[in-house]
Amino acid sequence: MTSESQMIVYGPNVNLTERKSALTNSIQEVVTVGQLRGYSTYTALLTQTGVQNGVVIDGGDAIVSGVTYEIVENPSNVDLTSIGAPNSNVSTYFVANQDVAPGTFPSNLSLAYDEGAPVVTILDRTINDNIYFLYSGVGYYVCIIEGVFPASKTFVNICSTSTGSARAHRESNDYLNIKSYSSGTTQANGILNNTPLEIRIYE
Image 1 (cartoon, one colour):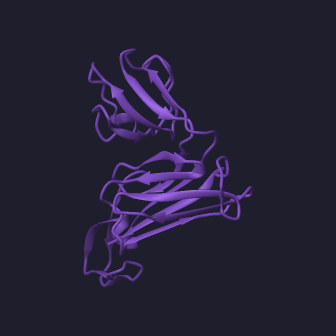
Image 2 (cartoon, one colour):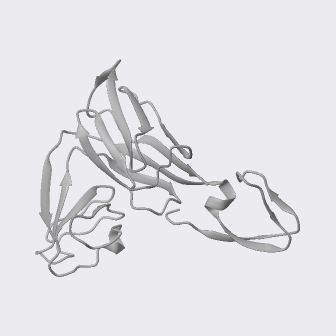
């Protein structure tokens, strides 16, 4: 699920106890999945390889799903919202939501990405804000959603891996820290391999 889907709940006195504040419906009410749960979610698999290395591509190159891109130049005002961008403005970061074949966009479009940043496969998403991932250092990455991680309502969990361990925590209202370790306290790249990350923002 990639958006905040809506549904109609029927029936008298349906008590939705899973919601943080129980919602009682006398006849019917349109509610979102987030309202039923009491929280919005972002669940994804993270894979990270290599080291920090900035790469710039143009419209003649392929765009890969799950990679975080920055819009560097867009003189033709290409609409990039269809591939996951919140807008098409220069300096905007976004995670591509689909593969795009080479030559689909004009050659004067310029995008940049970091080969060391985590690549994501989204499993479930009802948080609609722009979410993207950056490389910050060896075994150290950040997940950014500006202004969406309130201190008292943010839950984050990441699983260990077969080659090491991973930890994630809220750092501020704007981002989460994600760190991967080869052993003990030794941070290392290449540890995340389809590693599950779950974020919940409670109402």
